[in-house]
Image 1 (cartoon, rainbow, N blue to C red):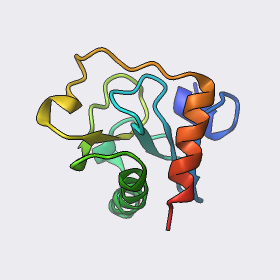
Image 2: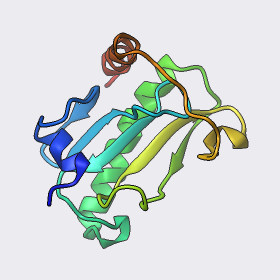
Image 3: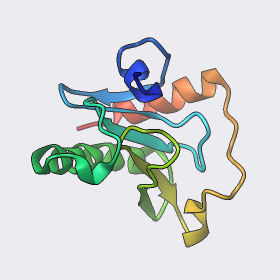
Image 4: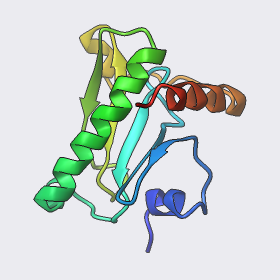
Length: 131
């Protein structure tokens, strides 16, 4: 059965897309820890990040770097934190989270709520800063 992320890639479930190429897809997290919290996935449905072949894993990191640089231009932060949990959805993914202190990447914290319009605006601003 297709994962939620595969359904997002196919357009069966809506998302606030940041970027896409032949192998990867980036979109805003709908339950973010911070404004601009983005998920980056390989389009190929593989459960565990370290089961990706080396080229796909390396490409995911390079694609994520491009997205992180755009987020930094939109969301004031000291860094873009990277988290790989991999337990909640059986599809490899990376969280890119704007952070100013260590606790900003604590997934036990309450999630932020943004309206669909706010998410669309955030996604648009990040897309506009992609190189």
